Length: 199
Image 1 (cartoon, rainbow, N blue to C red):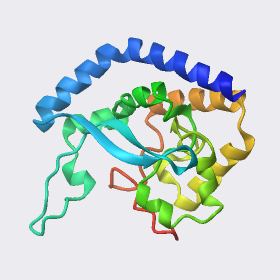
Image 2 (cartoon, helix red, strand yellow; image 1 turned 180 degrees about the horizontal axis):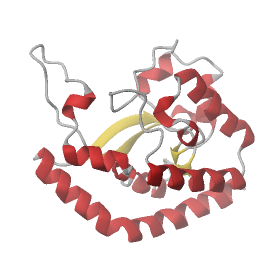
Image 3 (spheres, rainbow, N blue to C red; image 1 turned 90 degrees about the vertical axis):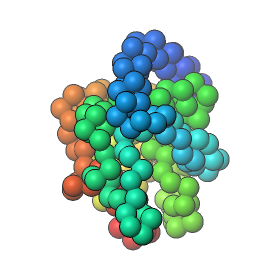
């Protein structure tokens, strides 16, 4: 069944890139003028079996620093164009290239930051026993509006109950939630608070 999942990932990723290529070009140009710099964001993330890879996203925030040289809060750095792109989840489109490379699946636990590997419990590390995804069970059940503990519980539910039916259900719910722009964030911050092993 996992071979079928991989084949479906390839087919849908290729179709997605063809269909969304005009949108990606528009987003690229809009961010290029908005940020006045190359708008592709690359970051190392842990994938299957904790193997590190480089994830691609559209960059939606400025690199503005405070007087001490630290980045300002996300909500102060995101551009107006970036807000729209985030709301529509268009910043995730470059990850279709990660799917082609086999680093991501369309559906799976979202790949988080590398530094979190040091503070995961053995149970939480099980989320890396499957290929991470662009969207997942946690994303359609609260996204950034739930706690880290709940997010990991949902990720592990996916690991233990994976099926092609569940994947298609998640894809359908993802489309529904993106259209409705639901569960985007839990506060004024654009992203969740960093995971510290307790929250």
